[in-house]
Structures are given as C-alpha cells and as structure tokens.
Amino acid sequence: MSIKIITDSACDLTDDIINEYDIDVLPILVNKGEEEYLDKVTLDPKKMYDDMRKGAVYKTAQIPPHMFQQRFEEIAKKKESTIYIAFSSGLSGTYQTAILTRDTLKDTYPDLDLEIVDSKSASVGFGLLVYKVAQMAKEGKSKEEILKILDFYVNHIEHIFTVDNLDYLFRGGRVSRAVAFMGELLNIKPILDIPEDGTLRPIEKVRGRNKVLNRMLEIMEERGGNADLKNQTIGINHGDDIEGAKKLQKMIEEKYGCTDFVLNIIGCAIGAHSGPGTLSIFFLNEKPML
View 1 (cartoon, rainbow, N blue to C red):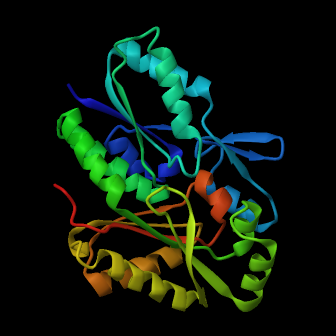
View 2: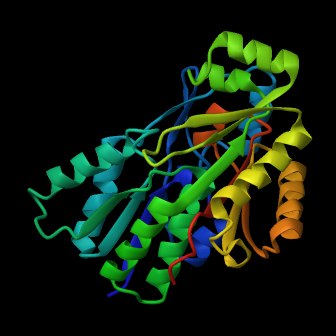
C-alpha cells in the first residue's frame, strides 16, 4: 500500500516537487488587518513582500481544526495510510491542533491510519524532510522505513539564515525595538538558526551583507563538514531576493562542489515574520541515510 504524504505550506517546497510527488499541502492562514488569506492559495508571496516594503503588516494563524477535520475524515473514509509532517511545534500550534483533531476523530474512525510528526523545522529545512519522505513513498517504501528516515532528518537538519531588516523580527517579538534600531543604523545583519527544540535562535551578528554570507558558509562547514555536503540536496530560499539566493548557491557550489539544490521563494507563512531580503541555507549535519 502506498503512503500518502500531507504537510503544510510552511515547508516552502516548489510547485514542481509538490506536483511530481503528489504531496497534499494544507495552507497556513495569513492576515492583513481584517483580511484573511490562505498561504500561496489566495495570497502570493511576491505580492506580500511588495506590500511589506510599502509598510503593510502581515500576521499568521495556524491551520484551523475544521480544515484538519475535513482532510483527516477523507483519509479515514478512503482508508489511506498517511503521514502528516507538521511545521515546528516550537514556532506554531499547528502540530498540536493536528494531534487533537486526529485523536478526536478516532472516536468515530478507530481505524484511522494517520501518523503525525513534528518536523521541528521551518521553510525549506522542513521542506527537505517532506521531499525525502515523498520520494520514499513514491518508491513504495513502508511506513516504518519512512518514519525511520524521517526521524533522522528531523534530528540532523540545519537551518542557517539571515534577515535584511531587523524591524520584521521586532514586529514578531523576536528582537527588541532598540536592537532593531541599532541594527539598521549600523548595518548589522543577524545570523539565526533553529535548534533541536524547533524554536528560533539568533547566534551571531555580522556587519554588512557580503560578510554575513561568507560567515553563513563558514558555519555550514563547521556544522556539516563531515556530512558529505557535496552529495547532499542543499536547500536555499529567499524573501523575494532571487539574485541573493543565486549568489549564495554559486558560493556553495564553488566552495563545496554541491550540485543538487532546492531553491524557492519563502512563502507567506514564514515571510510574514522574516520579511523581504531573507536568505537561508539548509543541510544535514550528518551523512544522509539512504
């Protein structure tokens, strides 16, 4: 029996990958004032970034229970064996809502075959987990095999990213107003990561865009130098800065010899908090399990 893969829009995978592997993506809610949108369904990331540059403020909300209930009931009725990979529980309540919805539905559908996994990841770091699992599902691997590899990826995926404007992190409560103001005044660019608990953590501050990109590659080597970077799929994404992302890709190609990349714009669920100009790198810190 083939395994159905469901995820949510914070994974930031490309449409080509989603369509090729028949991945079911549930949209996270995005709000601008009283207006409510569905990430990448009724709101395009490019439009959101253009609006943000003009001063618009976007906020996000987790996937509501009724959306999970509708999709999970379809799984139960079709008797599909399914894995739902969720946006990090350290950054959203989506994982907990999915668990509660599934457990409630089991009263009506006791045979519901649905495994829910906390990715403890975001954006294309999250997406690389989903991508690997979807490949395995298409190859006909068992649920047990898939969950074993998924657990490895959850525990070994690295996120290294920088934002172009600290004001967006201030709006999201990630930094203080004073830090945001001084960062802009002194052209300080933070480097952040997502640690094992799936939250957001600033790790360094670097002055200037070029220096921050070079430092991101140094951190990549420090964390992934023994992980066969050359033969990994490397994730790169951007907050409407395709030129910056391509520059980062070229730097990685030249430094590490990498040839396989997933490159995409950051969707609304993540970009509403990180803002335009964000650049990110995702990779494994141990050799990938086959």
